[in-house]
Length: 217
Image (cartoon, rainbow, N blue to C red; front, side):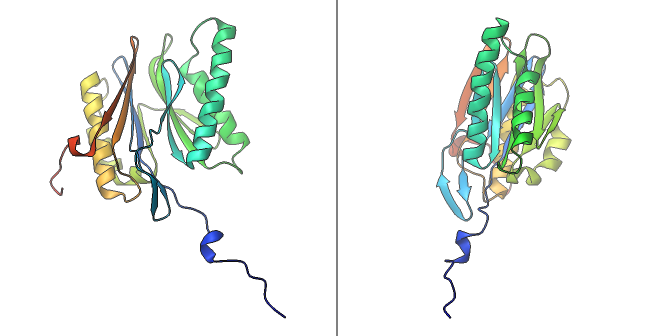
């Protein structure tokens, strides 16, 4: 009796992904950052993906996990926040956006593989950073995620200070991303930054040759 051919092992294996995302509060707003490499196992499938997704005018999320799953959650929340803001007649709260992400992540935790950091500015709480993972909702002064985060926990714990200025927070995020990208094979490319405060948002892309240099580079 012939055995049924099931194909090569890699067809049934879980695809490994990797990234580095970070968000930090500063005195008056937040800064989000991410690398741009999208990987599937040992292959790089996109070198310049922007993983900082707009949820509302002054609310963004940083994406990690499955790119398709994370983007789907962001698009759903973006639509729901648009409807919510029309009903309210004003901009939604950052916590409301984070709660929507948390609810979707928990409801579909068996089907989706994604972790989103939600950050932004609102009239009630100022700059805020929220971690959402499988039903968890936690407000933090800063948060890191993705495969590259394990390489920089010591750095962010040592270098973070409360009430940093806008520029200090941007430098903190860029340095953290640079260190993670130099160590983690699944992170790389360019660095994307979004800075949000009461006046609005500022988006920036830092090319690889413009990133800071460290002793082992």
